[in-house]
Amino acid sequence: MHVLWDKGPSTVQQVRIQLEGNPAYTTVQTILNVLELKGRTERTLRGKAYVYRAVLSRELAMGSAVQDLVERMFQGSVETLLTNLVKTQKIDSDMWKRLGQTIARLEEK
Image 1 (cartoon, helix red, strand yellow):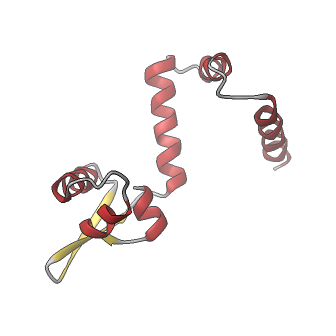
Image 2 (cartoon, rainbow, N blue to C red):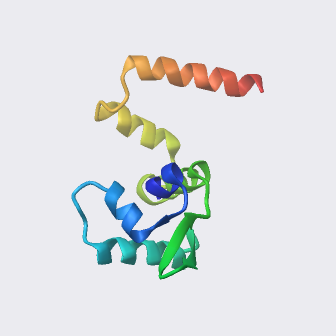
């Protein structure tokens, strides 16, 4: 999805080139086809190759993934998620400051 968001509509080969680790063509093709079945991408036949494009915006997809994570792993508790991030040292004081600024901006709106 990141390749499609960053580069725009792409063929399997174009996506494959952008990925680390040199994945097999068929692996990338399978993933893109699964994403299409899930409604995350659409494909159009151009010549002999399908061109895939992201259907969901990055923000919408990430929001949905975070919501799913909170529901499945933290029983719906954002506080538990944040506590876990602090305990595992994924959030430091500088990040808390930036988060506070973001929250303040959102509250102003």
